[in-house]
Length: 167
Image (tube, rainbow, N blue to C red):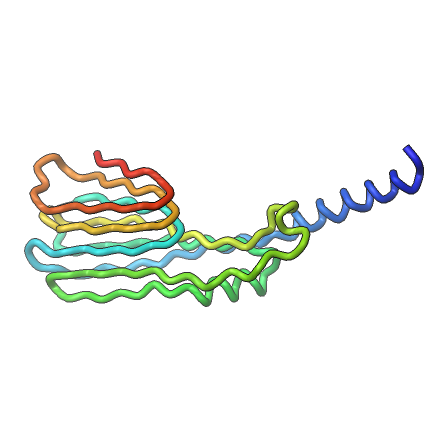
């Protein structure tokens, strides 16, 4: 191998390794508890991330979202995080959660090679009272409904890219 080609390959390797080392991961938790009456309805819309729903005997719907942001730098990670909107509407009969993510900018030239492509994922874990009607959707993620066999309420689950498991 010629000396010039060797140095070019070495420089490219160092550049890729240093770029990969610069990825920032930011993880935050969002939690809410909603008091509900008898036989409430729960609706959740997500974009990118898994959803797990379980039943309990409390009279509230508890929602925990683990928000995970990956970006090439701290400022971009913070900017993406601050652009996430988890909107909620609730009363004693219905709780609705909608996840809106900011648009991720186009990737820089080396990002596909370094694994530093910005990404956002919101993973939900929800506890609902027995008898709750459930409607959950995500575009990119799996859905797990851990519901008792005697659950008489309706349960709808939709995902474009992922699997749906009902236990």
